[in-house]
Amino acid sequence: MRRFRGTLAALLVLVVVLTLYGWSMRPHPPAPDPAPTLLQVQPGELASIRIVGSAGEVVLVQEEGTWRIAGAAWPPSRRMLRRMLHQLQSLEARALVAEEADDLSRYGLGEEAVRVELVLVDGRTEAFEVGDPNPVGVSYYLRPLPGRTVYTVQKASVDFYGLSVDAFRERRFAAFDPKAARLLDARVDGMRLELRRVGERQWAMTRPRPLAAEWDEVRTLLGRAAGVQATRFVEDDPVDPGRYGIAADSDRVFVALDGDRTITVWVGKVVPGTEPPERYALHEEHNTLYAVRADFLDIFRRDPAQLRRRTLIAAYPWDVEGMWYQRGDHALLVARGPAGWHREDGTPIPGATPDRVARAATELTAVAFHDDARPIEPTGGELVLVLADGARTVTLGDSVPSGDQARRYVMVDGDPVVYEVEDTLGSVLEDLIREVPGREGQK
Image (tube, rainbow, N blue to C red; front, side):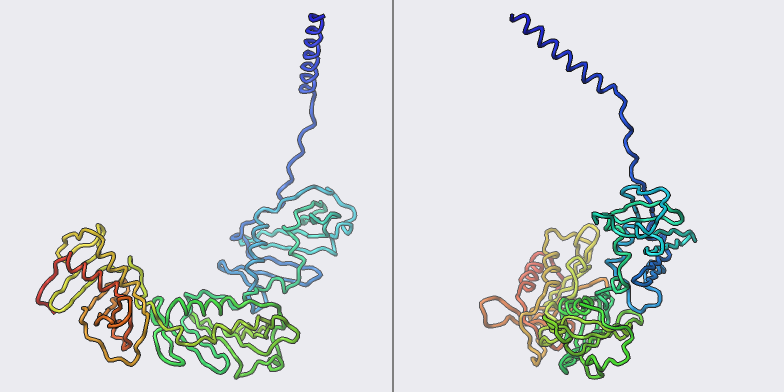
């Protein structure tokens, strides 16, 4: 009985093996062809994109790498452009629907379709039509032109072509690079704030009162001006801006950039029925009216004293190429070379003290201001920083007599303002004098 059971098990295993072998040898249908790539166009190959549909016509033109909308003063949406150009680099079909469709209207194609025409810089053209979404709404029908072949493509690759022209407007309608700004002039609630660029990352306030301005604070203001975003489009070429509360004495923000480009945004009255409140805003150079959040101007209402310069040396430690320090009759000169810091005779300087001095000097930050003080005497010495774009001079005065934290009076570049700073720089200069022999008896 036991021998019979073993034979039966062996027969069962043999049957299974033969069955699997027979299945593996059976011919299988060929794998379906992958969905074809319908279009491959790189952004730099495009000269223009024309979109025509029931929502109107939009023509985008590329000139020297910059896109614009033909016939419009306002810029195209960068987000929309990125999306469109990305999809055109590889427009792939999901499935073939009909090789020779008899009734194109069944798919929303033909006269009802959105037509997209591409002109390439070498003169070639490409075109296709975008029809309706398929019954489940995850794909759209598309027909390459010429021809009557119909495919489905991913919804996200073409659904934007049927949007109105307003969808192609840049919401950040006043965008610019803050580093290219040379003048910011804001008038809000009757108060005038004017800031001018006077050097690399150096700005000065000229209104309401002259004082050196902090670059980080100015950059924040410029960023707010560049980042103002439309909540809605209102009107092109408004005939009567006054009906929106925009007049010669309205709030406005003006920015002048390198070259001749300017940006002027006039802000009018509150848009009725908006919560949070919105205000009308006119881009003067584009002559286009938008609505923006009413709090757009809040940052320009700050106390101008908050904008004054606190970072006294607008440079980084690695920008320092040399340093001249003199206190009384003791003077020393150090320079940075490919191998590190060295004395004026070329002798290398071991240790990190020159780097500490450069860091302390470039990180010099005011903690208090004395606008009407008399010029200080250089009791703590005078330090000249040699930078690639010039030299900066720091005059160190007496220690501040009160306070728990050691402070010192300083002046910078002959500016009449006397600053209070933490005395880190004075301490590391003491270390430099001890470690690096200088020259005596020189003024």
